Amino acid sequence: MACATRGEAGEVEPDFPADADLGTVREAELRRAAAILGVARVELLGYRDSGFDGGQAPGSLCAAPVAEVAEVLARLVGEIDPAVVVVLDGSDGHRDHLQVRGAVLAALAATPVGPALYESCLPNSLLRRWLDEMRSVRPDAAYHTLDPARLGRRDDEITHVIDTTDVLARREAAIAEHRSQTSPFDGLSEGLRRAFLATDHLAEVVLPCHGA
Image 1: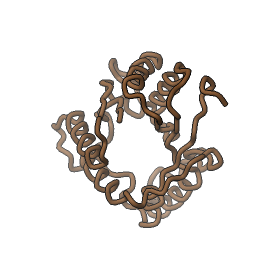
Image 2: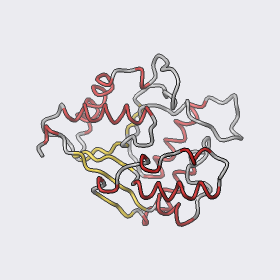
Image 3: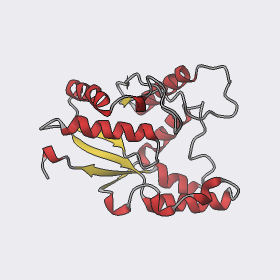
Image 4: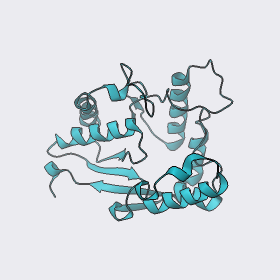
């Protein structure tokens, strides 16, 4: 598993100590969660978290040219030689996720014969359910300003749906290791929580150099 940053600019759990080194804490959380999931190798690319908005600090992921990040990822792909690469599709709007997606596309597009590429995504229909529930249980929050049509990935673009029920307990245990942040699944109804965590949605990407 490759992770571009340590998430040090992300939001923190309300009770998290203000003087803690968030980057160090989140790296440790990541490695514990990866161990629970059976991940044999965790590669940190060494960039700083860019945050959701604001200026781009030197050394942050979004301050780096896409070509530079792509070169780092291409070397890693060449070393590991994976059969499949999975990347977030960036439809959550986080600029670091979009930056990594762009770098992965560039890295693999330069490889005549490379791994299959899939984007991990959330279908628009599921996020509409989430928005309806959030508007009901948290009517004073900012969710009412979101445009339902622009949430997540169009359902007809999803090519693979994977039932992860058999590993749901392990997934929950891994999520629990990220103690410095509030889980986005906290407070959801049981049915909606399972809809997020007991199924994975993927969109296959066919790169031009790999053939249509």
